[in-house]
Length: 140
Image (cartoon, rainbow, N blue to C red; front, side, top):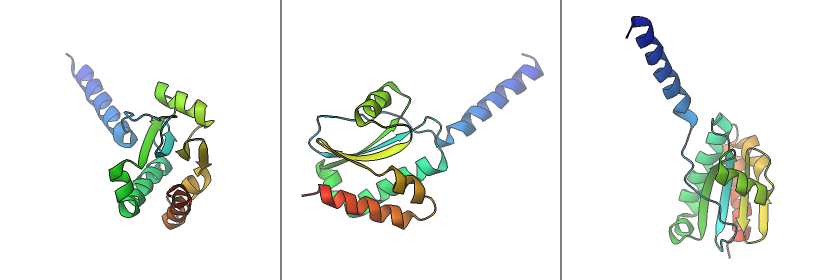
């Protein structure tokens, strides 16, 4: 290998490693037949600051305030790449158009996209309040 080829491979590896910073695996699935509450986050493969903040804040409030419901399976957080096969199917069913956040239980769907993406970075307490208020209406 020439010196130029080695440098090219090193640069490529570094570039790929740096791009992976905002990428998370898409192993979760939305279940349209679920009897439990699903908090469904749609994101792109390359995640922006807002998508990461929405996920982080959602998980934090679930662990802090709804840990029993998480442990019992009454609530489940689902993070989906909007462009994956699984994400496309779920987006079609929930009528999602891009990065968005929904709370789903049975046929009841709440769209929390606006407060989630508007406040999760700059005013996370406002998003947490909106999420908590909405989730409390689902929990019996």
